[in-house]
Image 1 (tube, rainbow, N blue to C red):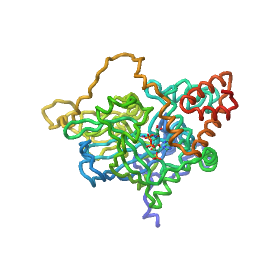
Image 2: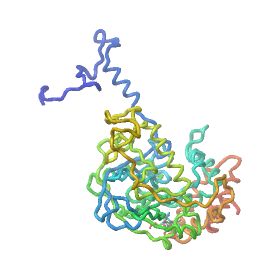
Image 3: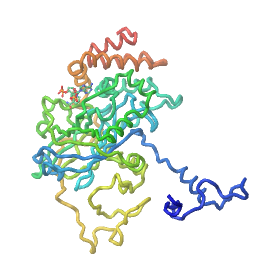
Length: 489
Ligand code: NDP
């Protein structure tokens, strides 16, 4: 191109400038002049390129796509997206590991984040799930302590099997998630070949104002595929960004990954009679009793043009449900309702929902104004208070939920329903009835390999405590892990 046709380089304020690679100097050999403003701008902006890393789920990738409704669930939910078979809405999904830093390997043994944003005509619905249906803890007060033990030792700055197992063995409600984590599902082959789960119990509300409890299951159409422990370790060294690369390459080759979108439904009466607490994040609802109901399909078909803009700045919040979907008593869900928007305000600022990937399709109308990085019209000249005599905005009473009935007292509860402390039946069924012989063997090897890293003066105490949980889960599991660790049970 001739010089005339090329576009001109500018500063951030739009001023064309003459030299991009040479600083302004006194003579060709320097020194540099303080007045070279473009030099300051380049250096200063570079120094500020990083925003706070997510404290969990730091390493991730994402893609845009579409959600298609294929079956009628209007008897459960009045959400507009479900109002007609054939309805569609755009989606953005971010996949991630949990414990590792932004530069860590994709194949670490870890749950995988599976965060979905549905851009519906009623606003954004975020279903912020994982690739496992349960979690390590069932009370949000434990979260910070738990995560510390999965990260680095405060002195050595190393991942530390001793603190990892010390905490888990002192927190037996983790047993179900620990079993899944140490099965080959703890090292998924990539993000396309794994399921996603909303994990928490949510509710759905229909047009008659009737509530049912629901769980969300997003099942891969690519089939489940996992690395074995040794394969995952090898890939960590060979290609730490393996899963990121896999997703980008598949979508760029028009091999669009798809998942079916399903719900399990429990009535309020069934919830009262359920063997376990239906709002306990360490438990599943057995499929035999609560079969999956297929709703639709998710397809991912577009890699974001700019990773930072769309993936790094993506902000999901379980609090964001649309009319027709509601919360439940699940304590972890209740904790996450607060913690996610709080994290985004810290990482991205109070106006994080104006960032393009987080912006809803419909018009936002409220009286919140100003704040750092307010980049829309900030309400223009319209009133910034309510009630007022000038605009015609009113609360939408049709979005009102039916009451959730409580039969309890406010207290610090210590005596729970005895089945709320049954941490072992469900992981026992998984190990003994669901896993194949090969999966059982791999799970045992994965436990043994990791628990060999437990060291220090408390080594035997920690191992024996964890073996005690294994024993209550499956005698075979306890015996074989003990053998592998050279411990006499
Ligand atoms: P089912 O036999 O109907 O379901 C078993 C489920 O286990 C399937 O969803 C299967 O997923 C999943 N699964 C298979 N291998 C593993 C693994 N290594 N780690 C995690 N999940 C695995 O039985 P139930 O519904 O009665 O559940 C039995 C046990 O299965 C539960 O105690 C729980 O541990 C586990 N499970 C149950 C789920 C549920 O929502 N009911 C969901 C996931 C696990 P897929 O079909 O994709 O292969």
